[in-house]
Amino acid sequence: MRLLAFLLASGLNAMAQDPPAISIIDAVALDAAGNPITGLAAADFEISANGKKVEVLGFTAFDTVAHTAKTTTTQPALELTPDQIHRTTVVIIDDLCLSADALRAAKLQVRGFVEKLLTPGDQAAILRTSGGSTRARRITSNIGELTAIIDSTEPLGGELPPTTCAAAVWNAVAYATNGLVSAAGRKAIVVMSAEDRGLAGNAAAEIERRAAGSMTAFYQTSSSAPAFAAATGGAAGVTLDRVALETGAFYSLAVGTAAGQVEVKVKRPGVTLRVRRRSSPLLPPPDLGAPPDDTDTLEVALNSPFDAASIGITATTLFTNTAPGGTIIDVLCHLDVRDLSYLRDEQGRYRLAFDIGAKSVVEAGRATQPLMGSKELLLTAEEYRRAVEDGLVVNLRLGWGAGPRDVRVAVADHRSGRAGSANAFTPSNSVESGNFFLSGVALLGNGSAKQSPAVRVFRGADKFSYSYTIFNAMVDGEGRSRVQVQSRLIAGGRAAFTGTSSTVAFDPGDPHRRQVTGHIQLDPSISPGRYIFEVTAVDQLSPQQRSASQFIDFTVEP
Image 1 (tube, rainbow, N blue to C red):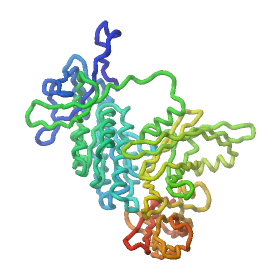
Image 2 (cartoon, rainbow, N blue to C red; image 1 turned 60 degrees about the vertical axis):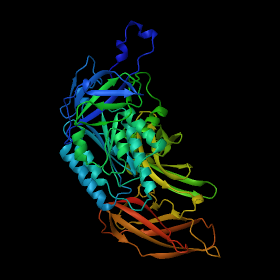
Image 3 (cartoon, helix red, strand yellow; image 1 turned 180 degrees about the horizontal axis):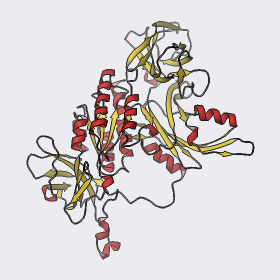
Image 4 (spheres, rainbow, N blue to C red; image 1 turned 120 degrees about the vertical axis):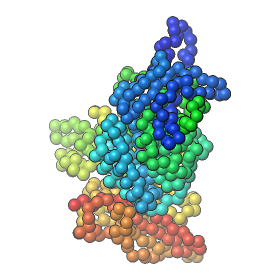
């Protein structure tokens, strides 16, 4: 995308003067029936900033279905090539908190959008609030890739508090918005979630600023945040059909004011505008200087869910709490070794070298300082063969504190420059809160990488163990706790197996941390596919009802 360089036309004295302030406004105009209006001109708009009228320097109307642009001023407001004029839509599905029935309905709607509403040239991506791998969620026009994501999206076990559900949604929105900065034209993010808590204060202002910086409108299928959606040029309570219709055309206006708060009105009666209340900055031209180093590559990969797909990587997060270390998140990274370059020495050993980084994101995009390091591995031929077959597991133990957060990891190969990234939403808690809660659930099979807690791929008749910790169970006068526990296997949002509820009596010990272990023997005839292993605990000594649940997914291969 090239934004018009108005600064070049500022005359011979440009070198001696400060350049004029210029920013971009993008808007969709709708008639009374909700259909896009495509015949407006610059004179139909009235724009003000800080109570003062602002001059329109450039005006361009875009048809994203026909891939055309029409400029009615001397200079275009936004200069895009025909292949950049298309609809770009990112759909975020809340697989963490939507009910099984609601998620099935959402998947049907997304499938209809992908199969019937995407036209040649359109691009889309599908994100899940639970996280995923960048390789599996690229912005693409490939219907097969998008359908595969829809098919693999399943409701996850466990019941999360509304505030945690909202945190997962807004972190996903911030993540997607960051990734859309480099995409051309006006973009749309559509969130398919329950009636989540809306944003307010600094978090709302930050997402709104990011939406302006990436020229992105926010839409929501629920009706929970209409004012915020409207402030970004989108709407709440809409369907994907409506979003596809509204994003078929837009206007771009270059205006004589710095990026910031603006008021945009249209003079024609009966016209509804979808326009954000912040104008977008002129983006600088791409830096064609020295190539980025590995640190820069990791930073980019950690900040975008779309831009690092050359290395296959998945992330599993297991949070716990220890007496000496407090809240800890174990990040289990599974790498596709085939995407890493290597050198072979004279003994036939394989030398791998890569950088790996992680960061934690809370409150709609507020991030911790990234933690980065390098790994160098020397593998025998047999070790390398097994790594190619099963993948390579890298464990990171990080002390980020408690609270729901999005954990992001990225890897950059030293020799090739290839990179990959993944993320996982983690609803961690703290012992100090006094809440009754469970740690993450670890599954372990036969000791191979494939059956490790990071990968969790089993076959029918396999046996695996599970372990988790119960926190803050009540104790009696002798320091004992009594907790009722139950486990389930869930497939497609329905219980495939429900274990017998049993009561576990814990002897005196650490009153805040009680560990539970057990085994699962898979039926030899179990159907291949993705399953959720869910555990639920009820504190039987508490005078009030106190329960907690936790889940982890695994795959059964044929």
